[in-house]
Image (tube, rainbow, N blue to C red; front, side, top):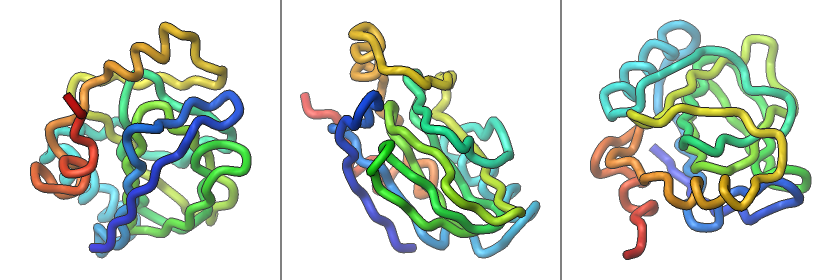
Length: 168
């Protein structure tokens, strides 16, 4: 499985995350459609990231200030914009997964008609949808959000565990 990690810096009103990298996993699941969605849901749940929805990704910039997010592409293909206007365009297809740290802006740019994603969040983290610049209080809350103990794709020895260790 090929994995890529990259940092997205603050951009316009989007805070992004200058400490924790976005993780992009290629070819996690070798299936498509309902079978892929079910396999992503099991995989995420087995690693402490309970799945909470199956749908597409919003077509407007937004971020989450109360949770990290795992996305498993179950069907179709498309281009996502991460980090806001002028940010990073990422091509994804069925079988790929992403982990977005708290604060990272994201939206869909162009996707196939059958594009479907499974969304999951670490145990104990409830997600919100933000479409405005964060206040100082929201920034403090995002910085204090715990780093999950497990990678949603690879478990306790995955890239998230290796790259998201919080400096003491």
